[in-house]
Length: 406
Image (cartoon, rainbow, N blue to C red):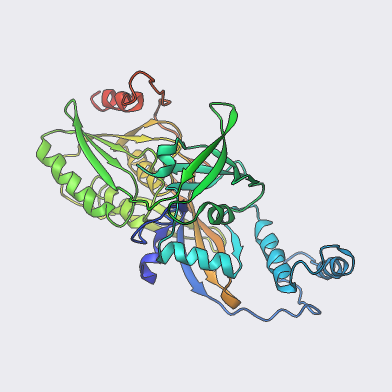
């Protein structure tokens, strides 16, 4: 993936293996940008006072450092450099933002491989919710989905080791591995009020983008991700829709963890008038806002009646599209509240092959509401209810078919 394309990847965390690198870390509501800044040498004996309005005393840090070196029975188990990395990681985590992390050389290498190369995985998107590592969505037809992993599952242990306060990136590195090997996840599912252990064999993940069908005269397009093929495939879907003769359209974004921001903007441009806001980036520190507007495609001569299906696995780019269509009163939302992943990260290359991923902005839907942590509530709430007698039954889709024809 070239640098420019990488800058516009909405970043969440995916545990997938893809033959192309287009949809490995799809944020999936966070856009990731890469920059380089100089990294000054750190002299353990001397430190300057940080630039802050507070009277910060750095002496405490070095007092603790010297006390640990003098008294801890674990002295010698870690190098001084490893201790410094640990301290910097603690500094990053002190902000309470799971997506702001300092990555030492090994983690930085793994992150870069996830963007530019291929790796073994289970085919699931993860994030953090209520301070717990959480499955945003298992990808369609992935090992995770086939093993029974569901949106909202909380990961308690990985291969018998408690996740605890591990970062998302640390959890990912433990779950990834060679194709054909197995990872054991202990998960907690709210609906079951219990934990269960699921063994998942890692594999190459072939990620589908869209699927179309006509049900009772309604054209349904399922969008599974906003990867690099989403724009073209949706255009093909629109052509099929025009030829179908239907004026009813359901866009199914359930279990869609996100992908490229451009894909969400492009798809929204088929329905939202030219120049109207689709999403804004709110840079809180500088006060700047960057607005992404509709291209105003004219492929559709008549705006169809639209319903968008969403659930807890709809994240980032999915939330951007759903929020824009809803706020412009183009579509009704059916399902359950979306995940709530809407922040922008910047990856800063540091010295000695380390890096810092820091949240620099939030996504705002046209109404000005931030997606991050809030999610988007549907107009009509319909919880999915499994039918053991008919595994193909879909009560949410059934309700969407009713609503779109009203």
